[in-house]
Amino acid sequence: MVYRSRAIIRATLLADGAGIDPDREVRLIVIPPPFLVDALRAGQIDGFCVGEPWNSVAVSAGVGTIVTATTAIWPFSPEKVLGCRLEWAQRHPKQLASLLRALYRASQWCERPETTPSLQRCSRNLGTSVRLLTSCARLLKVNSL
Image (cartoon, rainbow, N blue to C red; front, side, top):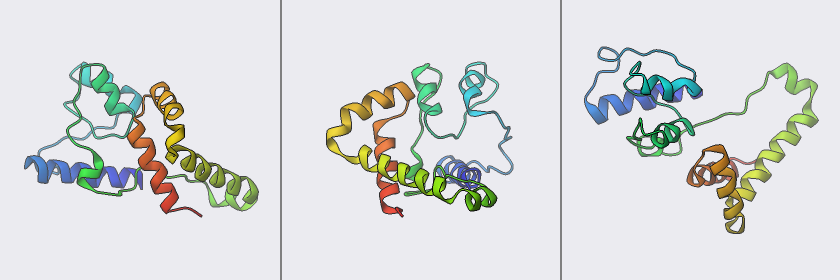
């Protein structure tokens, strides 16, 4: 799902935003996200479509620019998913329920104004923006159990 959503976002950005035919004018290669900034710096790639924190890392390193945010192309688009094998979920229903509750509670914590300073410290350590984290928190709340 995440790969597919990235493909839609990339195609929309290229075709609608830049008039580039993504099927004919772009050669796509697969690079693990932690290596994207180095590949950009070395001139091995001209750009990439990826989620946080890698785009911000490229900006901080002085080798990239964020052209647009995903939400400008596809508001409320899926970004990350929590997935597990059906077999595991069936064998460990209590653990799965605990994990989902923990994610939900974390999203509630992120959304509270009084936790903003702590969230900012966490996000700096993770290289992730507070805006991204609070957006995720809102989405989790909307899609809660």
